Image (cartoon, rainbow, N blue to C red; front, side):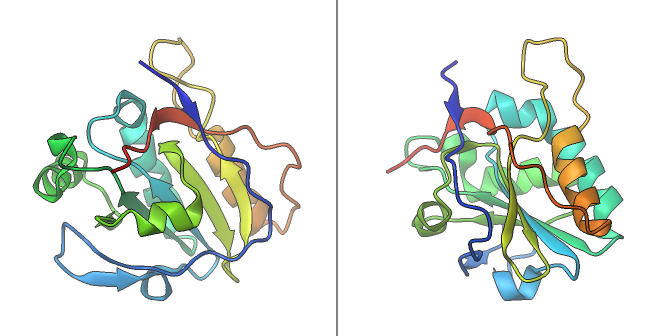
Length: 184
């Protein structure tokens, strides 16, 4: 299994806007429609990646824990579904239903949104503050498929806690790692 790290982005950049269909509700949403009062977590994920499968339960727990505190969570799949049919919108719907995703699961068919965010891997996590400025871009935690470290969402949760407490974010943020985005 090839491992791809997330790209290094400058903190403070503004979240690129988008308008994408949600495979669960059938509605199309923009970033402005979905942004949270305290902050917004954007996650590039997919159905087939073992790194995403490894953390799915924690994604749901973290979203449930923090959405009640004013954060929104948005999942985006940008993979080429012609080459990876497991990531099709129909299968995205099944994955969202099976995992009880409490967040929209958006399909980026053109891959324009992934390019705008410079997404590199699945999972790839971005945390934006209430002004939609990037404050965290890194890993969920230290757990990976095959290592013995439990999945606990420590790094992402810490970033969200820092926003809630007005504490400055860590200067050094470890990149996420996972499967590469499957480009067309």
